[in-house]
Length: 153
Image (cartoon, rainbow, N blue to C red; front, side, top):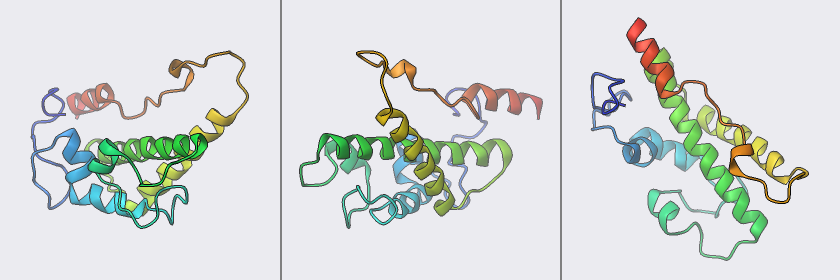
């Protein structure tokens, strides 16, 4: 956000962190993100690998050791995408509205989003090939919206 001119500081906005903020830090390295990924385990999402804390390495090199069915693979990746989106949203709420969301609430947001995405993906298809453009994109708290808020504050 700092590199885009949206924030004055390049440090992580999470209380007590102070590390340089990057996408990798925001999603994986910040202690808040680590807590959120630890909360998003197989107890919250039963189709995620049991006993594993999700990390950047698992995202890059594979989740779980056992082969997954196509359905499970889809659910896993929808869950990971929804969790990253929830972490990003919680960060934007902290920066833009000074609202700190607890890790459990962030994971609840991710679970709700994941379920919506799953129902959407599993629904009837009217086209032979459904493009990614047909999936709605959330626009709340976008970078541009934060820039406008920062300029008016």
